[in-house]
Image (cartoon, rainbow, N blue to C red):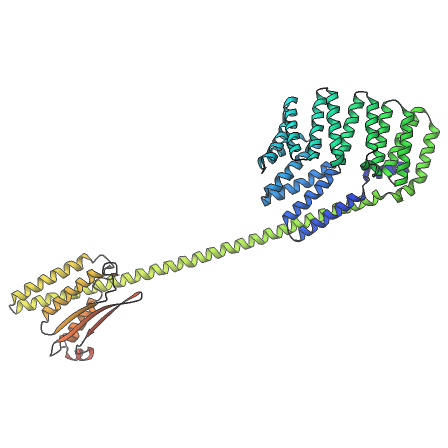
Length: 540
């Protein structure tokens, strides 16, 4: 029962190197800093860092998870450069998990948004490599990528290309060519990417085993055991010894396999690798069972159970896994915190946009009301002018006809004819402009000139007049209300000048003052009060 419990623990906790814990803690610190600043690009960059760590550790599923999150953020930020890089890495993670369809889609997307001809070609070649059923087409695409990677001195990509060519060679049953390409890939990757080198070495060993070439498989495994990146990593060393033992088992050499597994078991006990020790015990137990050596099997289990407490106490991976588990929870909390902040920002933006919209509507309404009032004011002024004109014209016509009547009554036909001629000319001008609210200033001057000439004829001995116009005034472009001044002139003549015993004087002046037109009527009549006294009751 105790052994079964340890087995379950071992399956739950994978042995981890403290470097992984250090990387995870740094990534969480970077993520927290970005979340606190609400820096979406910083959050995406932190996800990419975590994804690359998992990718280098061979945990492609976890790498894919964080790359998808980073990709979504870069898309929202419209960061096409980083989006291209992440999309390609996502395709590679999916390809490693044999998720071919989404991998092809992401390779194609990376090609579409590529900034350089080289990256566009590399991604297009990878998409063609996965989607084409023809080995020749796939091999050509891979070779193109190898050539491009060599030009850029990207050795890890060159090694990956040779490994891909080996897959095609294996499919075509060309073992010699597959062996050549895998050896080339291994030589390059062991310097640049140890994890990749281990995967390529395993692929090479599997190729030899499948073709019953056990000696070469053993040679390949012994070769990798001599590499520094294996010798310096006790956990990986135990794994490689166990894989070498598996080859001896397939070769039907159980004695050598037992010796190797005992060696692996000893290293695991010494370095505190619980899972690897349990795995070695299980393999040894199987070999003892085949040979019928029950005593050796029992002794092995007793030894394992006796050393188990000390083994667990030395197993750093259990602590590391707990730290990593807590780290994952912390990442989840930070993601929830970010979602909450994003939601608050979204609500704040909605409120702000709503407020801005309301202000725009209010400003628009104020402008509309102001313009409407302005139009009403202008319309009212026009109505006043029209009303004044309607008042003025009948009064003026009545007075003029009275004057004609006066000339006829005094048997002065010549004066009556002259007066009627001037009056008809004036009335024609008034009628022509009767439909216009404003007329050119020159036309107004002509009408006023005709009017004063009429009144001069009527009251020949009562006054002289003068019209003075500012030279800066444009007589054609300036617009004024028609016959607006006439009633004031009429009042000056009829109620002031006509009652003088001596000849009076009337002066009409037009002066420009900035944006205004000043109209001045000066006369030396008897004045309003004196005029009222001289009116008859009928006139009043």
